[in-house]
Length: 283
Image 1 (cartoon, rainbow, N blue to C red):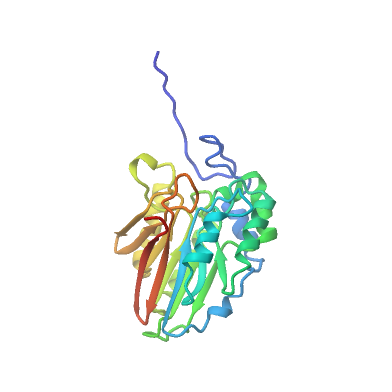
Image 2 (cartoon, rainbow, N blue to C red; image 1 turned 90 degrees about the horizontal axis):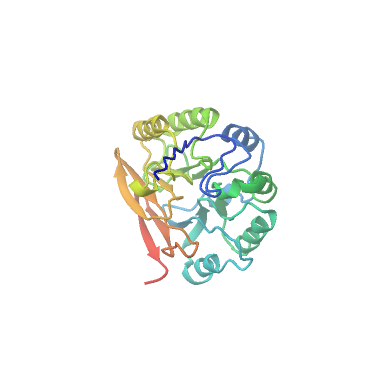
């Protein structure tokens, strides 16, 4: 007997697929509208004046279920360096979007003596997780300015954090992104985008990328046109470091076991130069 199964992947407000792999009670447009009126927990002004040489950490997919969050503690306690000025988490900090998972995550991150920033992933929206995210972490769509606009060769950087938890941005966030890129392009040494979902996954994992091909190519065209240096993303649980249409495209592995490569990224800025390293926690 032969069975034929068809699956439709879309970026809608409620999707139940592959045992809950994509499931959200909120839409990107709803979250973006609410995000505009919210504050972020960390003060972006704390990293406004870092000078022309600095470094920071990016990690993703903690998917915390254990209150102790052992993989996160390893990064914070054993691998963080005094030179690391801030941390960006690319989302899926929780497994189920439960309030207690958010509270455990924030408790650990608040032990840091440096600012930390987090954008939202698909797991973070499960079980009405968006409400818990708002309550504990604040806004998921934001920008960070390091240095001063139009002050080039000084390590100045503009970072855009996106909400791609539904594997789509939605029309309102897309319009905001294009307007923001148009305004800021060419005015900073470095222009970086951070997102949970990425453009292209390995062939066998194509369900875990931006779900609309037209949207992918529109974003790629915008990033090229407005001189984005790199997009850091996650979601596939598979490491990738490549260049797409002239823009750096790095997909981070998770900190979650048992699929984890146990790795994160450290970014180094020196004036108008930028580079990144994959830091393997387990040889």
